[in-house]
Amino acid sequence: MRKLLTYPVREVAPYINWIYFFHAWGMEPRFAAVAEVHDCPSCRAGWVASFDDSERVKAQEAVNLYQEAMEHLRLWADEPICHALFLLADAYSDGDDIIVNGQVRIPFLRQQYTGKSGYTLCLSDFVREANSLSSSQDGGADIANRIGVFAATVSQPTLTSHHSPFTSHSSPLICSLLADRLAEATAEKMHEEVRKYYWGYAKDERLTMADLHAERFQGIRPAVGYPSLPDQSVNFLIDELLRIGDVGISLSATGAMIPHSSVSGFMFAHPKAQYFAVGPIGEDQLHDYSCRRGLSAETLRSFLVSNLEMKRHVRKNSIPDNLFIALL
Image 1: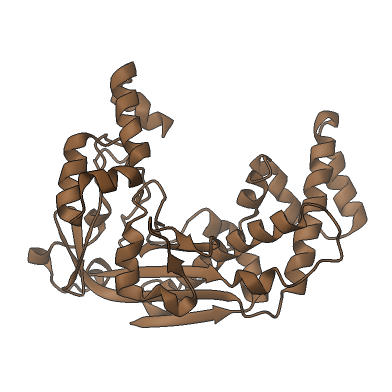
Image 2: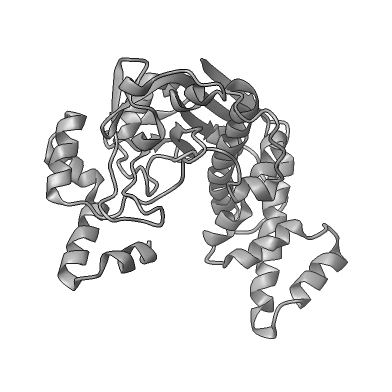
């Protein structure tokens, strides 16, 4: 199943996780609670007053930023500029690779350090091996024999065509940050619909926005560039499967998505699927991954430089494995 979804901003805005919006302004997560304050002067003033004297200026700044952001969202409310494209496909694992639709091989990286799970995890662990494909009474085969591939984006040119009545010098930055948050929120809304309707393995799911942001649903949605999927060049494989140009996304020579307010990745439904960080990798793993990706080690080195640097740091400082994982 391949499906393109388009939403107006008003349907996506409730899914915004404001923690990351305020993080971009150097504010701690607690300042994102302004989004839960009733929209009246007295309630906002009371919220600011609840902070220590040393933090009230920052709290008032959070109020001002949130008001300006909400004004933009109100102006864009009816704009159908939030797009998501997804594919639900048959899949099986082959070592650390996943074969999608029996044709496209997607290599992944495995942890080299044991994490909280007690195992060295790889995303391919959450899909059945080819020799174990079988049906099950609880629908487990459909869960473990399939994978979701997605991309979400926001039509940024439309966003920047509007002008807020606020005249803050930060408005262009707010527009850019809101576009990023809306792209992530679009992916969140799409994933909810996939779980409940399109894939349908969680038909009875009833979660609040807080539950969604805390990822209390079955399955995971790892995005390209995030800790479990650090190789940005995987976007080329996603494009091969999805044809992301259909939602206005193009890729740079390095696999970066254009517009920037875009996100892509995979969806896994296995009840034991969990997020993790690949962490440090060594030269041996780089060369193994190179063979599986069909790209030179030097090409991939540029995509995985952070993970390779982690390895050198661990060796140089002799950090114990368990301490390193705790730092992740």
